[in-house]
Image (cartoon, rainbow, N blue to C red; front, top):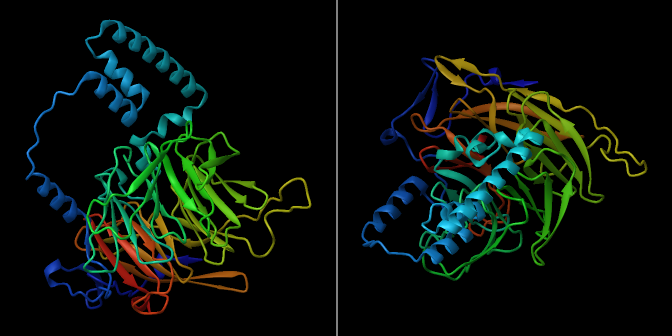
Length: 474
């Protein structure tokens, strides 16, 4: 089993380095660092700077108070914030009859909510205010970057930020960065580009899902893009959205719903997959579209067969599944839990998990521990611990951690249905920066280099986005 203790004498690329003379991990001030890890044609992105600049630009506009009619205010509150907020507005109004009526309805709703919590005690801990405890994004509530998604077929990066906006970046230095904002787009949890569609982006947020159709020919920062909002019964907030490999189906999970929804977004119809009394949290299709891995807010996770839509139930000993990644071949899945500093592997190669000839689904093999991520110390520098997020492209695995600031890089190979993991090095940010989100760029034909190349993309706590090429890993 691989271990962080095997990272002896590793070099930290970028702005941090392992000093061989003193055997200490050092971080240089930004003004003394080189730009050796910058990849040509990739945009330079700092979300904190852009949020600040947009805020300053708004100071030039004079904002005058407007006396909004109560009926208009009530309608806006209903569509933006829902029924409960509308009733609270009526309760606090000067309309005595409506105030008393709304107060009575709110009391009935509160009693109903108490009964619901009594029979579903796990719901007490999974509100938006507690989502940070389950999120793959470190310190989600205050994170400048809350999600980052590459388009699978072309160079487009969608970045959701703490101000509830989404920015779209390309590798064209002269292009305008579109800014997507909508009144329904609050507390963004997740993003997904639709495969084979350069202009369709799905957003999972507090109020459900938004489907953006972005005009690729627009040359303004606030394009006239259309966003369609959908909210299915109790399926909100939506914490995970994922397309299958050809974009024909969209799967969504909600923090407060015990069903996974499978959408046909062309017809805007959905089919629920319900197999648990615990709400689902995250999901991911395998690369070949054969399986969906789904995690919950409890210790249960499921693997769904997309041919039969039957699932196999698993449990972890402690906590919940924190993060997981499929291999590109779809034969292995790596995952970590919220409590244990261990990397687990689930194999699909030796024997099928699902036995279609029997009425009962076969019990799969045990998940195997493949790496010990226990926290270590190198000359007063703490490394490793309980994992926060995984990023995997089949060749390299990146692991970020909940309480330490380095990213561990492993090399992975799959041979004869066996997974091999080799420790490589750590990546550090500048000073006290820590990674809030990590992902690998999908492999596709780059119009500039004419070859496929995977790039590890890191969103640091400062709002800085950094790109690491696979060439630097060799």
